[in-house]
Length: 150
Length: 475
Image 1: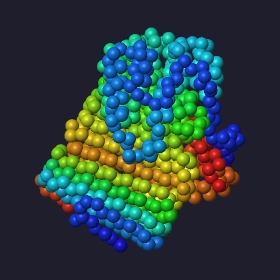
Image 2: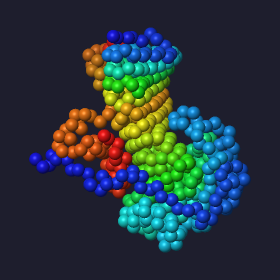
Image 3: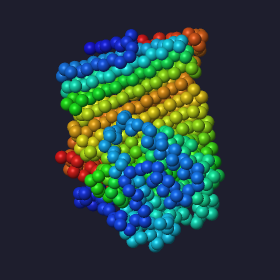
Image 4: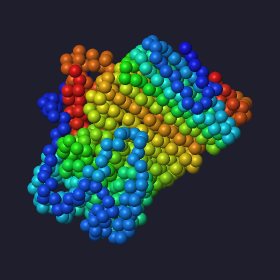
């Protein structure tokens, strides 16, 4: 099952309480101007043998601000859990601001859990390649952002 | 094929069953000063006059006490609600004066440190040592070679007496008393710790070492350390700690401030092995100027609760910071540790590697912060946290925060939590190792990337401690 939370704001909680449940959660966030967006997702594994995979992509332009908090909670009885969380944020302007908080709270031992977060600007090699094909810098950036949020 | 047979760890480690070897204690009857439990204005003034301090330090202490009394106890991190500030003895002075000659140290203290092994280490590979016993540094030395080059290595009390201007310029500027409740408490009650100054372009090639021993029951130890590494200098400082086994809690609350000037390099290594009744609440911070480098190596094995987040403020262009930390949380223990990287200047880089092991109901938490300010363009930061959970009673958490205020940066964080791999165990056991031996070997392999960066003698000690910790924890 797949859940898209791109349009959501604020605190979200998803509970996995049926054995064998598998979830994929995606979120693509694009903020511009002076917009401020905060999204917080809490994934709770309550029973054994559940799987979750979270992928968040964010793009921040101008003086916008994006804060993504992702928490994986594995309760004591939730053995054989697999849970992964990835947060990637691209900053397009020097005044763009971002905060990434990926948390893990693991109370069971037979689990595979990981999270990764990165905050970077647009890759210069990619920009250079697109511009060498005749795109302006602005167009090249737009193409990369489109691909990133697809 | 013999080279594929894993070498079993020395049989010695299997014979030792008591995992805490340093739990003995000495009587406090011969102490020169013992304060009554609890802290108030009178005691703070008493400590200050006992030490013959200048007026400004006395004032600072009183201001800090006020802050301490006003600030609420932190509600995040570990459980601090059981600390009874009124039952702790804040000032315990075992002898009247720091000794320059090991022979002059009272016999019972000498024996304690012989058992811990500091005098032997001093003879063999150290540039200088400080040994602190409860509130006071009881012995200190610095080899002549370093003294001649202008290196200063004193107890903080002695440092204040001999270099009051230098101390006044830096003391409490990086960690002000209002930073947190425990920094405020340290500001009011501080006693002992190290004062180090390394002159321009001097490279201290042998490590300086301090050893902190809590001896009395319900003791509070509040050492204060200030390190100033002038331009282009290098120094490596290591500290160890241990305490007796008591049933009531002691409190260790240190403050460490380090100034790394242009092009200087400081490595600060801690092997923390308090007994499991000690609250270890420590604030450590370094300010790194242009092209300077700060390395925290932080090993936490002991204590009931440790909350410690060594930080570096990368204030000059091209400054670098690195933290390597390992925590082992066993029964009744909570290791809430991590690191903070504050990037304020361009081209700065930080690298944080944290490994933790939780077992027998212990809890290990990584708590960290990476902050990249608007002026810190072209900065890089990488944080990697790996955690092992050995049984279903234990817990592992990761709480990192990344804040970025400019776009031309590279920031990454990754963390994994897992148990000991069954295939790995199966393989090693099929080669003839018992489950315990195999688990030890895997845990040692897990810690190795970090342990190998420790100074040699600490690496040996760490491996031994990890083996001891693992004793009987499997099967």
